[in-house]
Amino acid sequence: MVLYFAYGSNMNEKRISERMKEEPCKIVAKGVLKDFTLKFNKTAFGKPGVGWANVIPEDDSSVEGIVFETTEKGLEKLDKFQGLVSGHYYRKEVPIETEKGTVECWLYKAVPDRTKPGLKPPKEYLNHLLAGKKHLSKEYYNKLLEIETID
Image (cartoon, rainbow, N blue to C red; front, side):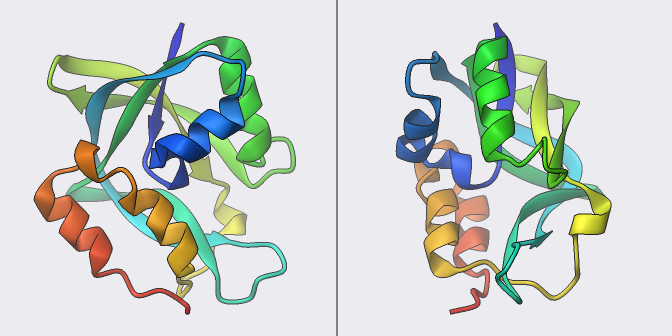
């Protein structure tokens, strides 16, 4: 089994279960990625001005999300949705803090030349992140609510 940290649209349990179908994928903990910040700077092919979630290093900042347990095959399935093969995101193993201690998790990070400043998420996309409310601190959830969308 492997651990995956969702900080973007896969925080929506319905969305990730639809993507995973037959593969096991269960929530094991709330997680925090330290010294990173959430940005919507990943370009959306064919959608000018639209940005998808990404994490970038930033001291004294953090990104909250959900730690899922899945299989290698499950992670490969997510690779397809995340555009790993087409060079949109790459997988990186990082330490994630949980209530049970620090665990190593895979996350998806945007390929640098697929990022651009000044992008905004669509409301529908942001709603996928907001769907993770029960796994987020009140402060972090409220911070997500304040994100300006493109529509």
